[in-house]
Amino acid sequence: MTKKANTEVSTALQRVIDARLAVSDPARADAFTKIRARGSLTARERVDALIDSHSFVEYGMLASSVNPDIIAPADGVITGLGAIDGVTVGVVSYDYSVFAGSQGDVGHHKLARLFETVAKLQCPLIMFLE
Image (cartoon, rainbow, N blue to C red; front, top):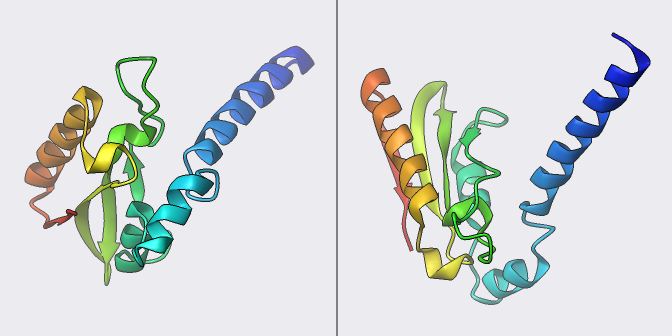
């Protein structure tokens, strides 16, 4: 790979890393503080508490609303596959800090993808609803 190509890959990779960090709990301090004030866990913390360590693969972490004027991390719903005691499970966790846990069109597509995957794999589906 050329030096220019390495630089382009490095720049693109850094953009992805930055985007992932921007939707993480620590980067969303106001939302995180409100959730803590209620004595609750964040949507991602709920998933982390349930799923085997490092087994969760999130679908659409960088998804957002179809409306560019709306800031809605993951479009209000965390979806993906993980494992509990080594058994594959689908997981949905609505993010109450994003428009009180509502989802948009993109969130709906994320759910549809997960439901199809869970049906194909014939594995359990766990949903955290608030």
